[in-house]
Length: 138
Image (cartoon, rainbow, N blue to C red):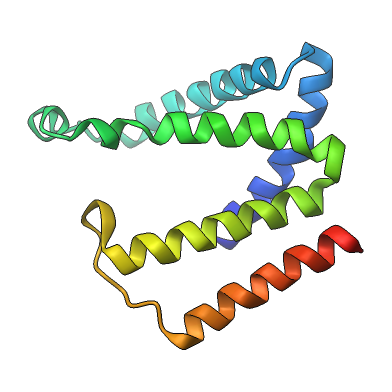
């Protein structure tokens, strides 16, 4: 996950560059997802694990929305990075992820195990919020 974080931070300025060249954050997201689709197609070919189509058909509608969330992230990051900087963009991204993740944990949403929002977790969220303010002001 640490490496995924490095890639997410690196994806932000590279998609911002792409956005300038293709003249739109939406166009940049489209190109980014096209490249990602090619990479995933190669990975699927290498891994050779066949899906359980019965389980796939039984999924609720919201289980299909991960790609839409990802598209929103890529467009928002490509738009924001040139305007507020990479560090502020990623800091706000992480803050949003942590607040949503804490709420989802508290609810046990989407079939995940319920995890209480303890005072230590609340303190961690407050420290992240303070970090967002410091990065934005710095």
